[in-house]
Length: 573
Image (spheres, rainbow, N blue to C red):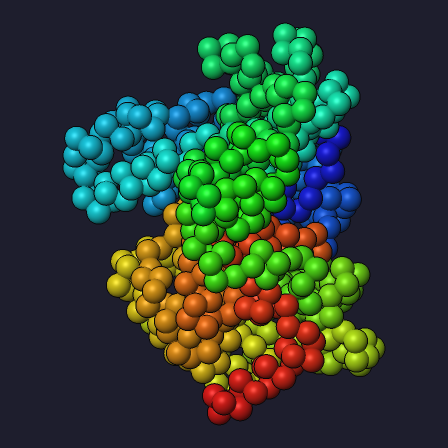
């Protein structure tokens, strides 16, 4: 890490946790491991920034002795930790990669490394496929199957980046190319807002492909792949990443046409319209190359770029119009957010004030519930204290802005909600989410969610599958059964707008709407900047055909207040 970058408490926690894992991997002194782990745990709970504190002040914090304090100062001042660097040099890269395998901790990895001499993922897969892993004491068939499933998932995600990173890389690439070319356009998966991107595509308008290739060679951030490149397309990667980069050279006057073609998926382009002409043929032969004109020439309804994946968009368009889709400007508030009351980085008032600066009229706080001890979940007495703060702030805001009293209640193992009924009754709404015991069969996961949905206090079902894109596959659920139950019990489904989640998957949005289920674009914000993640949620909502009228947080403050009030009356709570 660059030492010029200001370190945060979270950075210190990350480095300490990695250090503790590697110390355990190398079977070092258990007492020292516990010291580092405890320090990470205690720092993670702190609300105040410790990066400016001298050693004398750091040692006054619970769990931080002089040795740990010195390590903190080293991290803050250098961006590194010498002890961690030394551990990393002793650890093969393939062994480090094993920490990405679900269910494998430091102790099991150490056994695999030393007993089977496995130091890379390929050898691990072969050993699991051959049944060697199951024979090791403490592993067994179940662990072996989990390892194979996790390896398969990681392989399917290789070479991809999330939507947010892809957009960042695409913007960097465009900005680097703009000084050299008159017209540069972002296309492909990034333009149609794919949640996972394996190729970042940019189009350049030029009649001098050789000169363009030479100009691109002068951009320091790019590494060319000579085998994959051609006279009319530069292919390679951005330094330090393995996501593909494709820069195509488009003749003068053809950029708009090619931008349309490159944006859409193949299945979308093959759709034949009323003129008996495919969309691709219409694009290739149109004199007017605007998007609208191309669809019209094919005899097909206009489809927004986000939806140009496949045939689904045309089925959707037979029932709706592109103007019906939700936009950022349609949002009136946000209801799933965290503050320093639990594991957020900003205070309640800071979060609310920033929401108001964004032009929204309500801010729903949904800090973690008491069972989520890892996230400093609120005990009942803290809930009461938070509600007093909300009342005082609302008295200051007046009638045009309001903080809503919510909670993100853990769905417990048996499907029940956190807290007793008398505590649940004090909230305006409840976002019910699974955070723990994620290894479930489809039947168990579905039953667990169904029980939570049936609970009259559940207002919103949070991130239904618990997935983390490119990192953790969600637990399997019967989506239709879950959506149908939400329709029956008047439960809203969350589109978790964090680019790490984007859960519920966009492919289920239209089915939910057809069943009469509203969807809420929730940032799950843990900081003020996290509120902006709703942009990703809007993009994914539009991809799935989300209508403004079916978007929960497109309700006005008055409509939201009335909805929550009437729902409680109907539920008798």
